[in-house]
Image 1: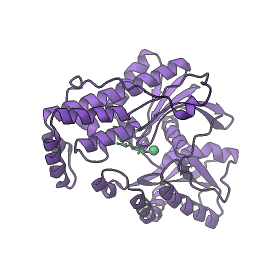
Image 2 (image 1 turned 180 degrees about the vertical axis):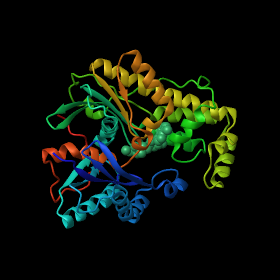
Image 3 (image 1 turned 180 degrees about the horizontal axis):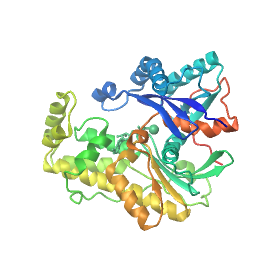
Image 4 (image 1 turned 135 degrees about the vertical axis):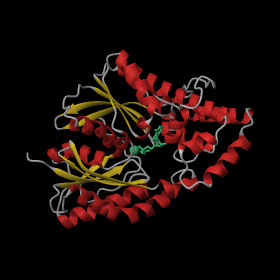
Length: 383
Ligand code: KG4
Ligand code: ZN
């Protein structure tokens, strides 16, 4: 088949994205409008504000993606949009717009699971580099502000099939980064700030208890134990441990002063953060990141061994973390396991990954019915 141009649209959380991807392997354009400035004063994403901002951004973002790609609406082969999981109101903005556009242009519309998008971000970039052979099964860690999931992925005909072999029982890893950053008065989103500050602290200073799961899900208790081993995560305990550390080390006054000082700076830089952090804070930040990275890497590699996978993918916003990448590269190499990450711009939410994940569905003629809608809790379908 000659090249296929798919316009992807993403609006599941706080980023409005539109992108054109050629045949699932070449990013022709990729536009992301971030709402961080809108949500920053609240220290987290405010769903109503997210929907409003998507409404404002969607038309210009799509226009720019087409203009950057040198494409017209008519020259597209198909449209793809995130169906879920995500914030219902935010998802609906992208879906309503994509539906209207598809109807007006008489182009097929493909509904994409956001998590499948994150997984395809890795594949898209590998293909872009000319690397077409990926060994199966793949173990994919999708780690972001909303998710910490482990999927075993296999290729099935034109498409992919997925089996969930682990997920967080409480907070997602990115959420833990964001909450600890908020607790320390460092601003939002916390992941990138903690990432950069960590190199300034001593990661051995604060000992966090092992991040173990204390209770089985009620849902699981009522069901017979599954045969296949699971590798679940839990990140609410580490947040409480950080809070306790702050209290016992009487850090509150210092934190309040930092919060105020940072709020007064329009775009705080790393130097501002470093200047406003004492040794205790820097050590806590570095130790927190070390504990998170060790838990994510050790559980993922244990799952990789248990399922004897051929390849590891690490994707989602937290996959942008420097220490996480280095640790995965080092430890996976010791086990002879190839590990792939998207570049940082395709790690966080974007529409190129949605257009890429839509390509096998386009080839299979898997188009969305006219009455499909947003699904805030959409699961990645099992084989
Ligand atoms: O994938 P994403 O853009 O949105 C969701 O689907 O959630 O991920 C955003 C999350 C936020 O929690 C943010 O703090 C985290 O990814 N994040 C990071 C880094 N960059 C973004 N966490 C750790 N280190 C980073 N460098
Ligand atoms: Zn995401």
